[in-house]
Image (tube, rainbow, N blue to C red; front, side, top):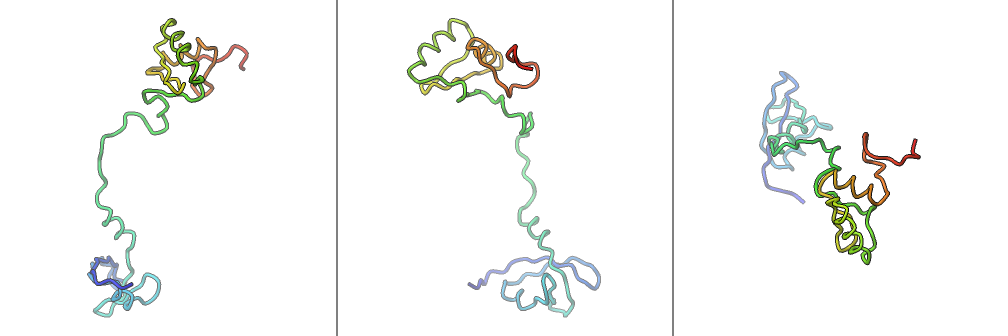
Length: 148
């Protein structure tokens, strides 16, 4: 497959080190190739193709979006926190939801049985009410008394 579209290629001249741009189609560039990334330019001098700079130029400037307030590694508490491990069977949802409401934990259960918490406080309270604990919760969180 040959293309007739001209592209811009960047080269560093081997004689004086200047960076130059060359607009050509791919077939012309292949004819000028000496070896590897070394090409013979129209004036007869040799130059090294700067592929990395071409790719960087093609990508354009980095886009600055909204910066996160927390690093990517600390995404465990994006709200709402949904737990599959602390889920109940769908036939038990009504029973567990009424118990959570009576205890005032602020947790809720989806129709598929998954536990949904909007805050760490509701998460900790609901897990303590049920007698289970989160082994990945981090420092300062409730752990069972027999854990070392």
